[in-house]
Length: 401
Image (cartoon, rainbow, N blue to C red; front, side):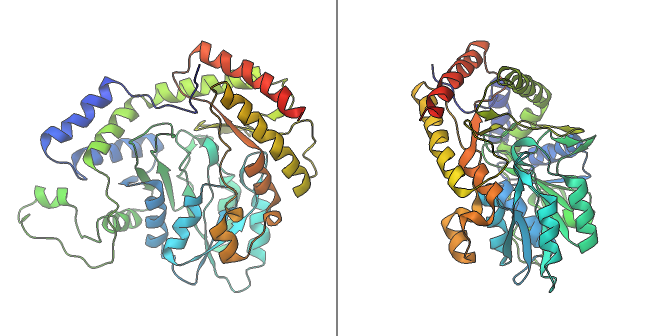
């Protein structure tokens, strides 16, 4: 049996959806993108939603539109996908890494506050919390710090679809929230992203920036009289437009979002029960009042060790066993992945900022010890049972290593 790490829910509805713009002849950002934006805004509770080519481009647009520039600094968690930090680099600003809370895999507010207290020159202009794996960061505490230190907040909600704190959706806490529709996410448009905000001026600026800096979109121009004339271009922009067949795909995916999310949560709950008494793995933690979106089901590999006192030596030792655990599962056809990167340990950032692995111990531990188990809405009972059976066996073999 071969179990993928995930798979999107795609059927005849998506096939029919993407053929409509192909038959209409309107392939670029158009009516289906507009419909997708409207539906996504309604789903998230944001006033405005602007579709983009990816979450990375959405993050870049947010930073640019909020005035982040060369000489500024932006705080990013040390454990995240590299795109978070890369988006800051695109603006010419500097990345300031912050360690995480290992239990949630998200940025640690106490570490964030400690960094802000040392910023005597007030070069830090923004913070980019990440809602990793479908769990919101501690946004109430982060927003409190942002107000105190006058920071812009760009929420990297790439994995945050259907994640909430109370009744407030991921991405709606700060100045902007950015989402990904990569095939590993809960809903997909192939590639693609979305920026949401409650700030009308920011939404309008993003709409222009994503379209080369045009004063109006092609769709607006073609609906108005005088559409044969090109729009004005008064700001430097980018080509970050979503295609209309991606928009149509997004509309179709949103229509089945409740089904997809509920099924993923059901399987995550089954994992929680099945792995509750299994030694060697810590299952995902969900704080009280939080709703997990389960973009991924990410555990922490502990072997037989107590992680209360982290050291590089212990992490590196456990990493060997973690990798063996994943190798054993791969041999049985069960796909796994490490959670994501400790970005501060990657070559480009280590070299540019003169960083070392030990500088952010929780992020380093998460990189070396996280394990993502297969999770998708249409996972069968047989597939689930096969994963659990092999996880138990592989753990025993890995811990004995």
